[in-house]
Amino acid sequence: MTQWDEEVDLLVVGTGAAALSAAIAAADEGLEVLVVEGSDKWGGSTGMSGGGCWLPTHPGMKEIGVDDSEDKVLTYLDACVGTPAEVGPASSLERRQAFVRTAPVVHRWLADHGMVWQTAKKYPDYYPDLPGGIAGGRTVEPAPFNAKRFGDFYQQARFSMPAGVPLFAGDTYLLARAWSTPSGMVGGARFVFRALGGAVTGRRLTGLGASLTARLMWIAKEEQGTEVRLSTPLVDLVVEGGAVVGAVVDGPEGRRAIRTRNGVHLGAGGFDHNAAWREEYQGLGVEHSSGNPYNTGSVIEIGMRHGAEVALMDDAWWGPSVAPTSHGGPVFIVSERSMPFSIVVDQEGSRYVNESTSYVDFGHAMQERGLERTNHSWMVLDVRHRRRYLNNAFLASRKAMFEEGVAVEADTLEALAEKMGVDKATFKATIQRFNSFARSGKDLDFGRGKDAYDHYYGDPTHGPNPNLGEIAKGPFVAIKIVLGDLGTKGGLLTDEHARVLSTSGEVIEGLYAAGNCSAAVVGRTYPGAGSTLGPALVFGYLAGTHAARRGGAVPMDDAAVEPAADVAVEAG
Image: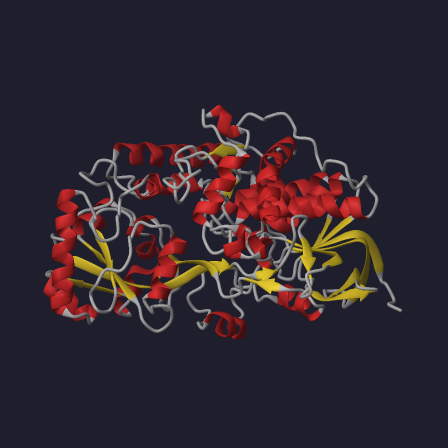
């Protein structure tokens, strides 16, 4: 018989979107919730992210005149993800329906809690031309949050940018061309005024994923009074009669056994930095991951120890990254490879992908080309690219990049090919063919610049194709590109209520999971911006509300939360 040190209704493991969504939902239903975080920083992968959330059919879409429906979204998922039969149980029809039906509920629910959403009306789905795809509106972003409201507690937050930089993910495509296009200059000015507005009013406004975690943490900790313990990792689950009845955690006060009346929810991230697992499941190391360094898959392993099934362990939220240097990195790249006057080639000097495609598809193309480990690619830049567009990699470590061979420069393409170590004849032919596409505006090999997603990160002032520009004016620069990721997407297999399933397909009573420690509902692809965070919020919410119903706090057949009235979107 376990000797319990304390007792709560729901124990939530993690402090990212999936965890805090579950904690807030359960507390809304009257449950006593305890949140534990294994690291000394709160916010998880969410705090390091862009903060966008893919929430199809959300109420803000009507405000911008975009029609959406459950059927349209399910049709789109079939088209870009594959059918449930093709993808497997992680992306079952029941899980897809649960996500699509609950997404607008979560949008309204969090708005009712004070979350101020901005609809990314120009951010298209990643496959806008497929059946059910749309050219903008399904992604939402949280408005900046004043971090000063937390006091010293915000010093323990995990974030990609410090408070005082209130950046929207939707700003990035404009800032990338801030000094070369009218829309970029307007977008840059708006960002500057937003930052200055916060400073002159004494606020420290957050941006990107930090805005999302800050608002969620404020709701849970400050408004609902939920206790949050940092440096308190989950050690094990306590299972009796096949059901999870508690957990063992470590922490500053030592090891403690916590009884849970309603269950345990796992929302503690993937296995981004578990070298042994990355080798076993994916055949590569951890050195090129941009994921949360604390994500080691510990909660997945604990679940497996108690008979949980896993899925999609060989996959990740892949994407091309600039190789790391001694000064930092890797640097995940998006807009840089999509702007004109750039091309990506492999070590043979050949193109193999639409450079403007979604990062997951780019990553899969690198794997198919055999570039997942020791081999690399080169992103070649005409001087016009460097003068007109922002390159985040150079902001991080320009000097080190050239000193350590991550970047090379030459006045001619022939000399550049020599420094890159690629076949000169192949490289010359590749550039000539590519330049002919740039002049005609049609990429006959890979279709770069064919749809609204490609154009989102292109240059609207450049023609005939906003994504294609000749590689013709030097000096030229080539940057070493490797296969990176934003985190892993495989993990515990769950059902439509976010309940963890066993290897025999049965529900493990009292155990829930959402976020990157669970297998992704979107399978092996990435339908739109925020396809990690949108499902994390939704399945966290479903876990919290189901746990309340499981324990009898509300009847099992009650709707979790009635949609609240729409809330006006404004800077906060």
